[in-house]
Amino acid sequence: DQQVKQNSPSLSVQEGRISILNCDYTNSMFDYFLWYKKYPAEGPTFLISISSIKDKNEDGRFTVFLNKSAKHLSLHIVPSQPGDSAVYFCAAANNAGNMLTFGGGTRLMVKP
Amino acid sequence: DGGITQSPKYLFRKEGQNVTLSCEQNLNHDAMYWYRQDPGQGLRLIYYSQIVNDFQKGDIAEGYSVSREKKESFPLTVTSAQKNPTAFYLCAIGTSGNTGELFFGEGSRLTVL
Image (cartoon, rainbow over all chains, first blue to last red; front, top):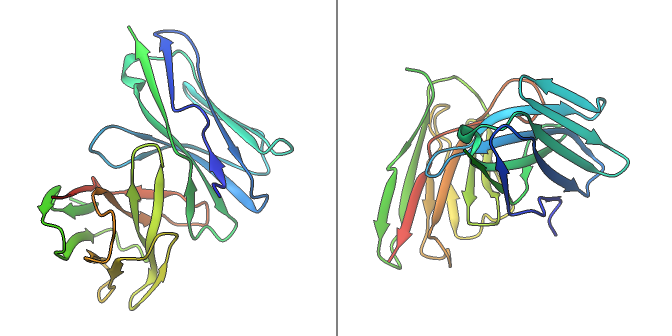
């Protein structure tokens, strides 16, 4: 039973437009949510995170929104750039922070 | 140069052979993790260790073994009991605090022929 789900395996966006990546979770004990970016044959790199006490966190072109009642979070990238093309993983941690549970990933392709 | 080093980056083995993947860190972090990545399935936790000489099973520990004799080293052995060993293996360390943020190595791709 997947506790963190990314229902869109891929997303294609034009350069300059907004990219919206979605993630749903089922475990109400999750306290922190994170987004990672991954290029082929490399390890994931941390992008942005949000605590469950917030509903929005912004860092430059990247904004994460959290809707606790819907158990849903999203990552907005604006404006999208070709270098943003990668696989994006959503992840969640409980308040002990011992382990991250990852979603299946969404492959983002930003076309020039 | 600080960070996490995984080796080898690529490894080919015959079916039935045990394989050990190395993970070394010089960032002095206590917590270390092994994840496996398969296409479309995200990252799944194999084992983790929060302190020397102690480790815990993750979600998919069957067919794997680990040791944590030194703080800086957390090797993973893929045994012949692992039914589908071909995958991309990622080692990570836990950063400070309890936000769950992990710092990953470059990964090791194992292909079993």
